[in-house]
Image (cartoon, rainbow, N blue to C red):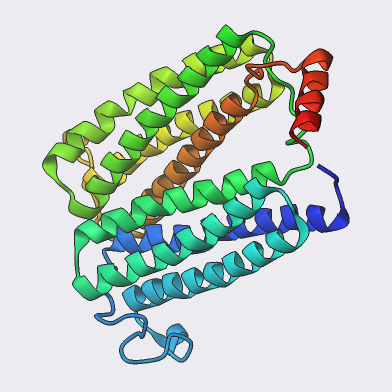
Length: 319
């Protein structure tokens, strides 16, 4: 990759878009779900009949304030995704970068439509899909940040194919377990089903056990990129486990200790929402780990000078 000032700015713009996505629509969406405020307005894209930009947002009640703030955040990221796609097609000729930029715009558009359909149809299943798809959108943005970085093309490959396959398998298994755990968390948040209260906490043991395995094989691979991924991922999973226990404490209470949950309290809203946001961040890091583990595999066919000469000969004969 030929690093130019424009490509550096593309990378910075991608960073900014991803960070704002986490801080704006993701964080506000988590609060909306915690407060069960998804149906604060019966209409969409208008809000109580107002144009989205004309609604008296700052004077609205709590649920309307949070939900309309989530809508404005989604609109902001939609505009940024359009700008990101245009910018990428202007300054980067790599096909993978252009495809990723277009995919980000498309996924943000679909995410907005899912949010609108959830309101118009008043359907909790769509709310669950809307929340889970947000993780896919954020992960896609993060992969874009990764591939537009200066060090991406300079990454070292793993010398041992067997070790490379092992670390890739470990990363994939960890990602699959986190996807299941994220889904169970979404079911619990949107439906509050009794079975999810049992499945979500107990299944958390699976990624907790798989994370150290990935960290060990990543270290054995000798890839600094994978070691960094595994360390971040291990730290996030441990943090999520602790946040999960605290979330249980504030949302369910501990009757044996005389602790009663206070539904709608400030600490409950903050902790439950933080648990959701951290979960998305953990899932995104796992996606990055899978992408990195696949990207550092040694090429299956190493081209020799003789094979290159043969290729030139065949091309000359064809001409």
